Image 1 (cartoon, each protein chain N blue to C red):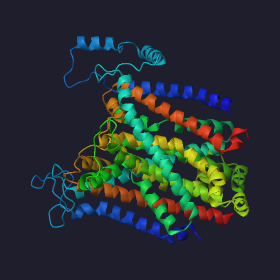
Image 2 (image 1 turned 45 degrees about the vertical axis):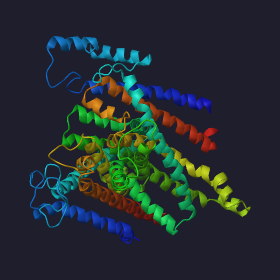
Image 3 (image 1 turned 60 degrees about the horizontal axis):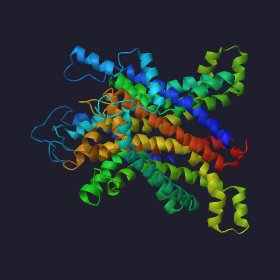
Image 4 (image 1 turned 30 degrees about the horizontal axis):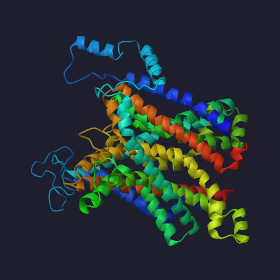
Length: 308
Length: 279
């Protein structure tokens, strides 16, 4: 098990390196540079700036320098946000984004799993039909439509919650963004749980468990839940990816000071180091999630743990 | 029971496809009944609220542009992008998957490994990069979005091809001396169409969603043209003063996506039923 994990961890490093390399050369190949402004700078100043940031070196030398700095944990200075390093910018925004994303993921799992199980247990009941139809809507309506709509209803008409904005430590400002962000993954998780739970409940060993007189609660929790969770565990990495991309727009609509804005703005401004920092953070998160899923799989399915 | 028959008996899917046809019809013939076009500015009615009696049925935006005309344009653009992008992902996915599945062995492993690596990457970032680097043209948008969809399509096609390869008529074709290219084109691909069509129907809403997402970020369709995503982005900014600017395109997008996914799901269920009966 531990060896398996270490092997996967070692495999993640080249993946990250490939992503970093591809992103580095892609963004450098974009026309324009970080110092393009309305007024063109005098050539002497531009040359000075480029020397200061190492942009006058050949691209391979820049790449080597960047990797070297990265190995020391240095993401470099931002080109557009003067006086800030990329580490500082991301360090300021990341807690907000993390809070938003983690809450959305917890809510999606915490509500999606019980809802799906409930629907499976009451197969073809009115509640099941209602939940299944609502899930179709929840999956199809994107968060950037849902959030303004929620803001309109609960913020502008009912005055229950703030439409946008942010105060450190305030949960009220996070409620609507979290709801909008978690709805699509929540509905997908509920639908998957319902499907796999229905399948598991039909199997022989569940019938045996019922037959030997176990209470329903024990049958579900001890016997049915674990195998039913397998497909849901496989969906976790895509769920995190969808929450991360969703958070790009949700943060901008809700005016949250997260790191979402840096990706698109950084790319448009040719703020090379900032974009690279964002890509690295996001890819590392995704890869870590993939590893976590592997571990979860092994725990859920002993066949994986003990080799096939 | 045939697939078509089973799909017809699915009331939800029938209703949903009716709604889609209606929306498309309105989007196509609507401009003939609407005196306003997408670019004309009506300074007398800036941010006017909707009303059937006025000159603007669904109101106007900040610049006095007719929201009805712009929403119809948005539907047309979103659907056009979706069709073009799924055509791209369809052709690349079918070609790649069919070759990998038919070649089998080491080639198959290598090609599938490549797909595995690609689908592990956060492709959305690369789409953002591409649109930033090569400017924001409509054709690049098709390409970039199509480039995402083909991975799953290739996987599905490859799986199907693996099983088709074992069938007698392929053996017969090989025996009668047909070349590999001809077998793939004339014998494998036509037999793939069922599952491919189902998956394509399921991708179209995802592509529309993705296009609106990019347009919302300002990376997709550019002014004065509009897609549902750009209209929603404009509307979200004017939510307090002019809620219809958000509700009209947002509602249309939501209805379109819900109906498309209901039809896709219905089609999939109908096909799965077919396969189940055959065995």
